[in-house]
Amino acid sequence: LTWQGNPARQIHIARRFQLLGMTVDSMRVWDIRRALQVLRQQCPQLKKLTIRAAENTELLVALASLYEPPAQQLLLPNLTPELSRQPSILNLTRTVSLDLLPIAAAWQTTIVTQTAPSHTPLAAAVSSNPAWQGKAIEFPQ
Image (cartoon, rainbow, N blue to C red; front, top):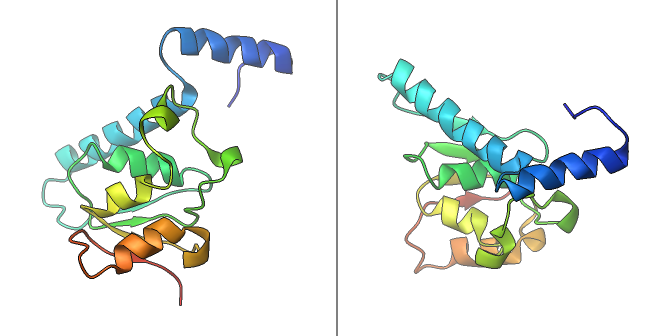
């Protein structure tokens, strides 16, 4: 869903939100967090929770999972940190490398992905290291 107007108007609206300290992607992370909180509140008997990311939301789900109690699994189909898929969150790439987000999420939650290990070499190397004490990052065979 987008605001009404031509592309120049769309950019103008996005910049206004950024001046307020918010972006669409940061609001999406908040929405994911609130959905998890409501789900846990309404279903306290829920023991195993699997979160499946939709297309192009993998990094948003990984980011949201850092701030909530761990889920059983995160299903993140594409972990490739391409520049075109980079979330628009103010100062995100100044504070953390996008290659580290799946690793940080895997510290507390098992991640299942369809991405080849060669496309995310850092995550593959860290999760396969015998000294790694976090959960697994499961790559396709």
